[in-house]
Image 1 (cartoon, helix red, strand yellow):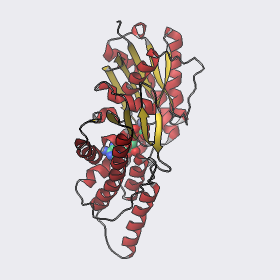
Image 2: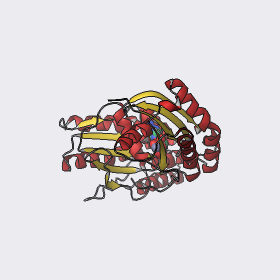
Image 3: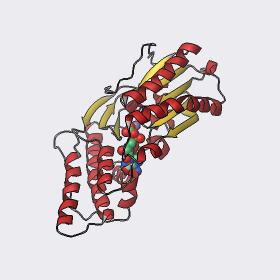
Image 4: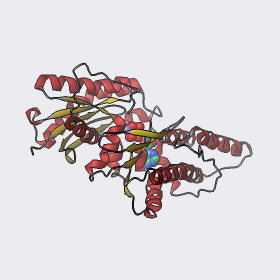
Length: 334
Ligand code: KG4
Ligand code: ZN
């Protein structure tokens, strides 16, 4: 069988990324230009700034990915691009670059859902085993997704308010830590003790999540302590907050893995980089030896285009083609 070479393009948030992937599994090149330093001083991603940076970077990043792959556009079987969800102005830059290349070089175009991409980051490491359960934890999403086959996604639970990464970033801001707060809290948590009593939203009988109550509890606890003239060590607050998030994520994932008798559990999205979450999942799944646990290496957990090309290859092989009127869909469902 002939090799399939796919160029992936990702611009949904604050990384401009392009990658070339062979047969949906092998990374030939993987280029990510992060804008974090530009957004940092504003304490979060500024959408208009993100769009402008993408416009400046997109051609350079795509050319670099092609150069590193030693490939020319004629070698490509398809171009996969994130069509949503994400920031509309940011998404449009990637979508338009992909459409222009698809039109000029007559290469099939495949729109990819950003979260489906995060899940397929795992396939760059090893083959997926169905049925599988994906725990998706990113800055915009917290979902448990059941997959019975390739590109078949069934959402069995999701957050009712804040995403896990969003809660991390908001709590980090309360503790005066720089953006993005997830890695900062993760680092602090390992220097503190989880000795502050914080709530866990179990939402019994569902696989849904809720993190806004936890975020409020952190703010209130800090506020009340300050009023009493007491100080709470930020390390202890970080450890306690992380423990609460991790307990719920791991507890619900284990429960769903058992109920749906899955063969594999995948973790996807930026929060999958969290050391506390990785350790707790490994410990919990050690007790379920029939279920394989897969967590991608950290550089594939955060936004990148390799995962978009990996997912795009599967969709391409299934016959998906996007027309040149492909748009950016900021609220796209999986
Ligand atoms: O998947 P991602 O790169 O972008 C989205 O699609 O949202 O995820 C970014 C999120 C941010 O909220 C960031 O704070 C969080 O992932 N994050 C972490 C860690 N690294 C990144 N959260 C907790 N611990 C980490 N080590
Ligand atoms: Zn993402």
